[in-house]
Length: 166
Image 1 (cartoon, rainbow, N blue to C red):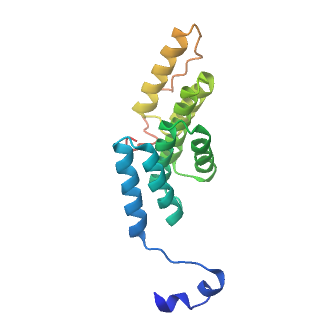
Image 2 (cartoon, rainbow, N blue to C red):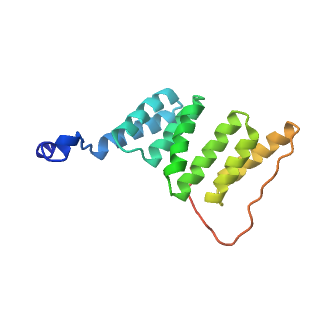
Image 3 (cartoon, rainbow, N blue to C red):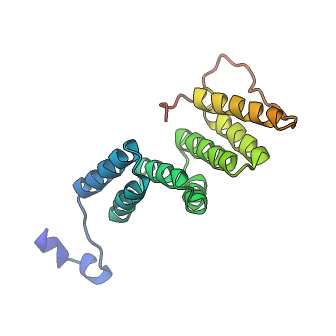
C-alpha cells in the first residue's frame, strides 16, 4: 500500500484506498445501535460508515431508520431522494418508497403516504410489509372520517419481484 500512495493518479488526485473492514465495523456498530434503539449513536456510526466508503444500500437503509426514529425526516428524505434517483434495484426502490410512505404517515400527510406505499408495490408487488402498512393507513384514514382511494394491485400468477423482508 505504501508504494501505491506514490503512484499516479493517486498522488495527484488525493485518492485514498480504504479497505472494506472499517466500513463493516462502523455499519455493524450502527446496526447494533439501531437494534438497541440508540438512534443518535446509530446515526453517528452509520454516518462514519457512509463517509468511509461509497454509500451502500445497507448503510443508507439503517441510517434512514435511525433518522426516522429521531424524527429527522428532512435528512431521511434527502437520502431517499438520492436512492430513488440513482438506484436501478427493484428491491431497494421498493424499500425506499415504503420508507417514504412511513415518513409521510408520521408527518400525517396521509394521501402522500398512500401514494408512496402504492409506488412501493409497483417495485415489490409481493411485499407483505407494504400491504399491511397500507391497511393500517386505510384504517387511519377511515377513522379520521376520510375516504381512501383504495388501491388493490392486480392479481397475478407472475411474481415480478421477490425481495427479502426489510
